[in-house]
Image (cartoon, rainbow, N blue to C red; front, side, top):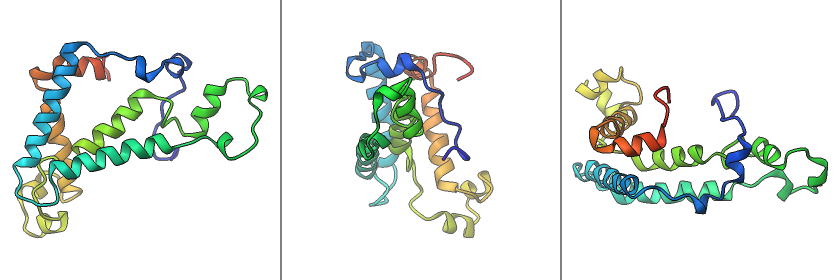
Length: 174
């Protein structure tokens, strides 16, 4: 994993935060709800019986469950926490940072939600074979996936989701 993905550095302050204590402002909650509804509409545009919002919801719930099942090595081995300088750092290293960073958890759930947004209903191979405009746009590589990301990104960048965007990425460089 470390060779492919740049994982977040450990932030002890984030690790001490109780995720259940986080409260989003009403405007952000409203925009998040509207964003999910707008993504759901992209699934509804397709007559494909598989790439629909019910499928996206199942994938999103499965990813969430999978992330909650990631455990640290001390669950399997006799690790004396008194011998560890920073228990949070230890857990972060043992889970590759996947469960200790709230933004990483959000990114995984977000990716699951949008993974088939506006799916054309046929395989990438078929899109390439037919020389579809989507295949041409994305250089015949991961056509449907790149299209889903673009649709979701363009939607998130709209003015309707400014507060949501600022909550996800508070810095312009993010």
